[in-house]
Image 1 (cartoon, rainbow, N blue to C red):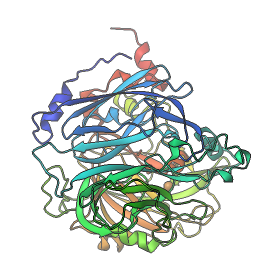
Image 2 (image 1 turned 90 degrees about the vertical axis):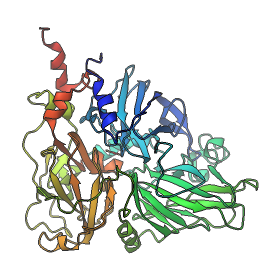
Image 3 (image 1 turned 120 degrees about the vertical axis):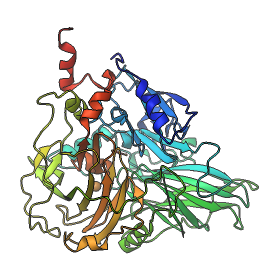
Image 4 (image 1 turned 60 degrees about the vertical axis):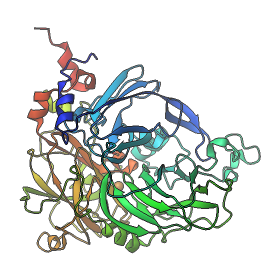
Length: 579
Ligand code: C2O
Ligand code: CU
């Protein structure tokens, strides 16, 4: 579809962002296609970018405009790309969410995302249509400070480490299993990957046993990734978890890490020898290469779900003055998978950096009055015999017409106007799910006013199997402040007394722990239509999400490009007789 809109907002917004004068336009061209890959030695078809996996690193400087053109060569699927952690200030149409911000880019089409990276830090990008992130469709996005500015920490060199869990089945088969009346759960991952590499024991695949046809442990593509460091120097490791299911724990044999950044925000630094990462989170840790020895394991383990079947993912930290060798020491292990207390302790360690010199740091203002409170109870229910996740008894189902376009063009019938409930049904017992009650299906749209300050409490509960597990929640278009975590049922009178209103960390991801609640506060200052969802790929696919919208008039005034339209009821917009 032809671009038919004024491009001048780009310049205006760039100038508005911290008065940055010399912003550049950074361009990338991504050709997306199926390709064969063997990240853990087992070859399967994935969605690759420019013939590689993981996707190329996008790197820009704060204030730059990033322009990424996609050519979709994936013969059987539409695609979209989400820029996870980038708020898309003024460009809500470029958020890359199918059914919300745009129509999928169809086979044979191309589409250009254009947005400003307003804040330095570590981010990533991933497909946001169906379960395409799980098909390997992701890569890192790094925003540097301008040359004359400095982060509140120093280092000599840096490395990116993107982390994932991995299955051998195709995502199509996995999705189909989740959607069936004969529900087929995806199960635990076969491998954990560091920088797209892991190692599966091919003798576990009976059909490939002796010959190693499609599972080959000497395949170059599954050799462990090597991160080289110079002895005596300090490195910034940028970590991002794009996991589809697993909560992860990262460890470096023999080295401690100083955690300095979380989701693109500086935090009060702290030391740890193992780091939890929930899906959707990014971190920077500083590591000093000052140990005796030459080669050390980087180890990745599963947290919160039984890890017996999931071997530690491994990489190699090599001191460059010595040849690379696979360490022969045991694989590093963090706390036991079910040591939830360790994870909660670490989650509560995060505090906003005091006196943060960065003007984009989004400092917490405890005096701003809260205009609305939502308590979102997350349960499993059944819809026509199928297992779904619901939020206050509403299961999210993607719309045919992208919500943003539906709202901007006021297309009747494009979306539900009934507001979802702000609170769960009174008296719900989070420890024992009732006989699966009927759940409603909808697009879960909460409408707010721009400027609202909203407290959102996510209440975790038992699933249909009576287990309560970790859910990592992610908000698009905004950051929030994590006010606190609590056990059991949230009590509106008592629980808020435990909130951290002094130095809550700014994030765009937060975990809920089993049978507990998590409270965040968000200042809705960026107009658009923004999903807030569990970042477990399989859970969001089963309906675990809602959408926050606000400020549609201002989005309309600025306009959205025609290139995001073309599907569902937006077709009407083009069939009108020309004036
Ligand atoms: Cu990284 Cu809506 O997700
Ligand atoms: Cu979840």
